[in-house]
Amino acid sequence: MKYYRCPSHDVRENLALEEKLFRSTKGDMLLLWQNEPCIVIGKHQVAELEVLPEILRDGSLPVVRRITGGGAVYHDMGNLNFSFLTDDVSRTYVDFLNPVIQALGKFQVHAVYNERNDLLVEGKKISGNAQLVSGNRMLHHGTLLFDTDLERLGRVLQPHPEKLARNQVSSVTARVGNLKDMIPDKQVTLEQIAQAIVDVVQEV
Image (cartoon, rainbow, N blue to C red; front, side):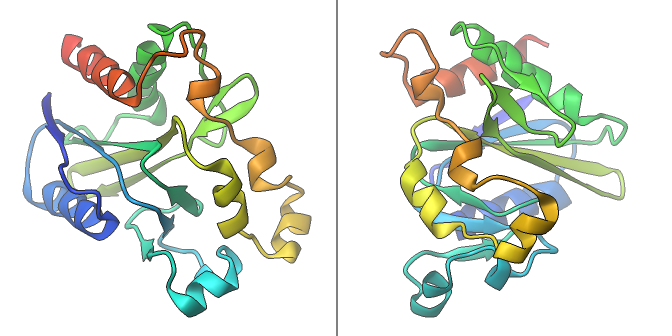
């Protein structure tokens, strides 16, 4: 599998590159990328129902829409994004999440996936995922919270109260956690996690 580490930290450049590679290349590829603080919403979401209204008014954080479904996410440099591109459209979420689980296992972190296609550690969500199939191409991408500013994450992602009540879910910050707090060896870095994912994928 080809591997590319995106040098940009601009969410607009990274999402544009991901889509360009998805639509114009063939074969299997893994992209790893990080963004400066921003909010990314799913293709079907209404920004006003997901994001703190002040941010939409004053533009203090970029708010961009991706080409896959799923929920709103906050990115910063403590968050690692991974994208798998493939011609095998029969692959499932499990096929893409297992390499990430194996990589985390190298650091004595036991991650599991749930029916929402999230990765959990100790009951906390550390990764959300989404997919898109177009023709004979599949895109799977996800986030991996390593040392994200969870206080800011909870402040800027503000689902409408009616949505919270309808779905009977707790606040964002109550559901998520950082890998940095879960890894026994506190010296492990985000770059080491990224390299472990690359190593597992290239072993296959």
